Length: 171
Image (tube, rainbow, N blue to C red; front, side):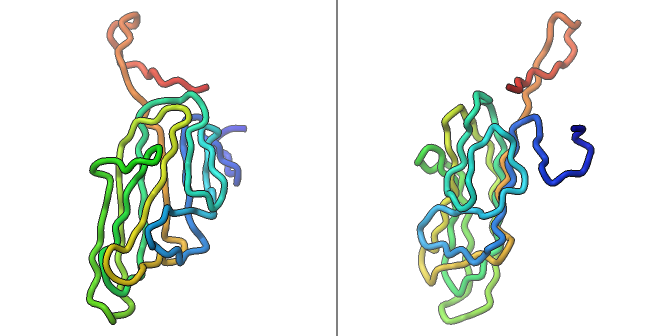
């Protein structure tokens, strides 16, 4: 199969994952988020629908860019999201929104996190959401998305006169 052909079963050669939640209305009450739709998933990742862990299952260690975004319907309070790796929150990985006063309705917020992290075989990633003070927030339908993509590293190949040469390993 050529990759430029349009199919529903796209499998990139490099590690890539794209999840979203069509069910929507997930409540952020101090729990890890889940996604019910796997749009694109290379064989490098292990993920089942409505699970909260995304694992790297093959030996394709390296730097990965994680992009998370979600639209929120909250009545009041601070909603905080952060990235966890192997059960521990990653420093500098959180994003927080603040919404209105208690009793207001129809307040919509948006949160986005971009983060670069190093993953090895067996590592897992989770997104944690919590409404810190106020009523629990909810995602708006189909707005919660998570994309994880491998960042290819470039190096110098001394045998080829110092030209920049891709050194990525695909297994």
